[in-house]
Image (cartoon, rainbow, N blue to C red; front, side, top):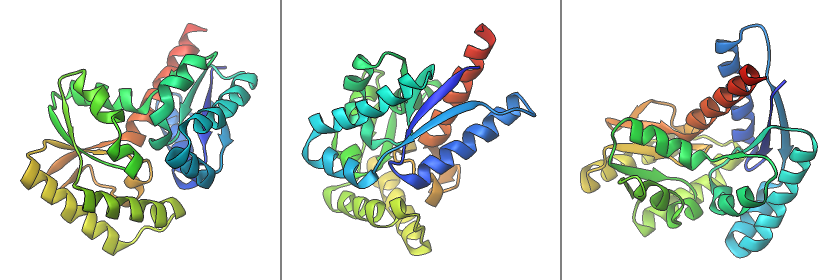
Length: 234
């Protein structure tokens, strides 16, 4: 049976969401059965410290998880979070099994929809970095992020509330206002929820009249599709 390894715990709430969605997605294509999913849960606080202060050590911390999952016999690996994808290329280059990128999956969908200008929300590390802009620019798309003050607020709410499973109505309301501003001021066509906790707060397919690219949903669909392909091939 084909097996996927998930690097989880970054954070716990989104890892639970991934697992539930994978099971639900599998049920739609192969009712009455369940896929093989192996989760290696890491320490989100340690991960955040490393992504902020020591990217080389972050690579080693994540690669230990890659090795554990590889030794467990998985066919491919996915990280159930956006932020650690800042070192995805380094991990994928060293991994003995394929890794499935959440960013590439999102870019595939944006390209399929013919989108050209998209807003991005996520942790500070995701919004500040070239992870999404670099990947999307190669396909002729532009990624827009909030200003510095708004980025600081988003990051504060992400780390202080969302990662802890604390989803508040007032936080949701302010996120919608921020997204409305991006729509009106930056002429974006769609919104990327570039943090896997964000869909747990913002659950609509459309926010401020913008179509939403839920990176968790897209990543999970790609995971299920790959598992199905491996099953058929075997």
